[in-house]
Image (tube, rainbow over all chains, first blue to last red; front, side, top):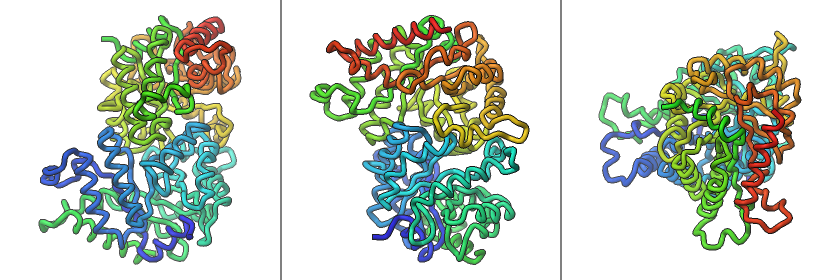
Length: 287
Length: 287
């Protein structure tokens, strides 16, 4: 059987670079949509299911941001679990965007929480602030070939200069040093496609930076947030790709809320599909 | 009404410096304990309740590590919610050890998740890696006087040297730079006790470091992990305190598993109470 990272690589080749972010807030749903659902969580799951069904053939990977579900308590987390199960049942690859980061037995518990049981995902995002020993508890799972992580490395929010942008005494930034560590950590988990199961979250910054980040991290698969609603353009990120692969680009609100931007009264899933196809082609054309 | 940080300061004066970590794994429970409980989560909640009832008068604050509950799925998170509610109903102060860190609307969702609703806690721990804009979405909650955060600043796990220990070109470490930012962020939320609602997680490192960390961060309340099972000693951390206050010291396994170390067959809650009193006095004597 194919390793997870090879499955992701193949999905990008076949379907394009879109990572669809299911950061579904209750106020993203059409007002009429709450009728007939027993709870906010249930309504959100049904919204997600229709978005998924409408986009499965054109989305490389889905990313589910757990914060939106945690905010609704147990009802929200039940919807989170159902969304992940529905995606996996339909053969989709799923990134749980949980950005967990802790050490020792606590990190083992997070690995168990998000790589098995009700909240099982394929990839999870992790926060490496406390050091590489926050990642190692995930490695026994990565060894199976079935699981992977994306570590924060270089984000493009305004506050990224606070820690990630600090310059060390050898002239490298914290992000650059971290990038080298992440590249090295991933070498134990390489797939046939030339990328490993330890990926990196890298923002949509300026072009020069993207060139430098890709050069420093060959063999590291990129999860690139910031397209669309957050202002990132395909042109800005094209240097992250090597022979048209090696990364996926996330859009959440831009897709989920496409129906609100359409002048015609159009079903939300149809509008989402339209935006996915537009985004897929936009990125393919830029690369 | 007293602000939360002033309540915590008062609790330390009155009850001592113990922060009891409810990092309750199923295998911490006495074997017989699962009988009569409908699920692992239910057994864990009942275990926690007895620990809490036996220690309320000698514990300044409880810290609940969500990873242990996430690992059990929805059943575990129901036990997490019940544990938090039971603590707050009994007047205890609660730190949700969630180490969340994200930006913009996602961070707002985490704030909502852990400062209201089923998972409501008093303080939460946060991971500041992506920058100070990961903290600002919590500030509207801090302004009420009822909520607070503890940001990771200087941990003492082996991997802490990877990022936190990097030396910047001005000679300061990443942790030191971060400490200055956290101090500054907290100035908008000061209590009458002289500490603010933005606290710091600082490890049990060597004595020289604790002196330097405290000098750099006056007015910042410290959450100090690592006592007991993780090897930290009261003597090592005494310099974190100013006039006997300004911090709490966490122990989890050392307290929850005290019953396994006792030579007599002793109920787990009685053993936990014994360890809390011993630890409380150990820290008081060292300061």
